[in-house]
Length: 258
Ligand SMILES: Nc1ncnc2c1ncn2[C@@H]1O[C@H](COP(=O)(O)OP(=O)(O)OP(=O)(O)O)[C@@H](O)[C@H]1O
Image (cartoon, rainbow, N blue to C red):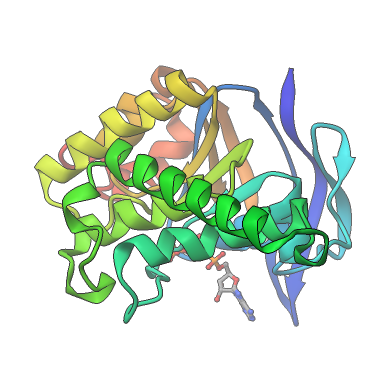
């Protein structure tokens, strides 16, 4: 079963075609990578899925529900969470609060505050704090719960971003260059963590990544974009040996370390 279905999605910025009639399906519970050279349209693709941009034409569906026309907060409510290439945290807030804020959107939508008595609000808060601690524990972040986010090492901030995404209880998790700036050890841990997320939560993951070792290790399926066009799609071993992909991307040294 497909969680995400993208059909004929096209996006132009003035004269620049950022995505050219892209089709893409993501199977439930899979890990899929979107790769390609700089400027190929990868982040634009995430921005279209998450409602940051609207496509000029085409259709995007999450479990059959149309996403085109929805705002980012509406897309998030339907079950898509993402992280960003440039980390976006509440830098001056403690780690725990960063997760609680992310959780808030989901909780307040589920139970309008006006319907709750003070005792119930306290119960909800206690439950939210319990869940936030659980998530921090799960992500190996519990020791940092009271640290200010901006003081964490870079790789740990990336993990916190993922914890914030998980706090929204997504069906589909989009990770934009999750290994950027990570040490080889942090990247190995990230690989294990993505595997665990899929096993423990049945989560579907789509990631944009330039670290080909990570991509080839973790993905079942890879979509390759070049100048906004989908030039190849398939399992890692097929993509690795695809002459068009080698020419457009892998041959340019992107496989170094793979
Ligand atoms: N808001 C925008 N306005 C104008 N052009 C844009 C906008 N967003 C993206 N672009 C252009 O669209 C093209 C695709 O950009 P995008 O960021 O999606 O590429 P990418 O594959 O994610 O690249 P990278 O690997 O460097 O992050 C680029 O030429 C970029 O300059």
